[in-house]
Length: 176
Image: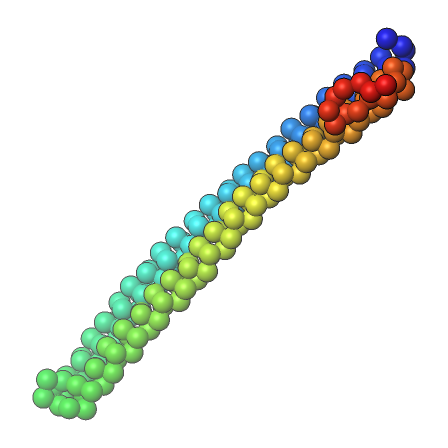
């Protein structure tokens, strides 16, 4: 075997080894991107849980404040000699306080749920993007490796064809 053929074989082997290293690195980058997306998605999901919790705490506090306001209204009506159970005006005021309190509490809960839902969708999107990044990196890695191997097979065939005659890489037979 001539020096040129040996050199071509060694060069091709080195190139294929480098392509395999690039293949591994590209796949690892894809996995890393997916892992980072999953970590960020988990953090966003934690924020969603916190939003729901804060909304529940706000609703509870609004109801507590409403109950306090309602008690003060009953005490003020009683001090004025008006009984909420008999006096329609006092009863309406207390009912309005109760309705407004419940409306505010439910609004707070709804806002928390909407924020949490949006955060959940963001986390889901982030996970999907991470998965796509990994799959894309896998495909790029395979394509690069296959391309490199194909070009090196062609180089080896060409080198040996020059040395030993025409070499057909399609059916791997020597032609004369």
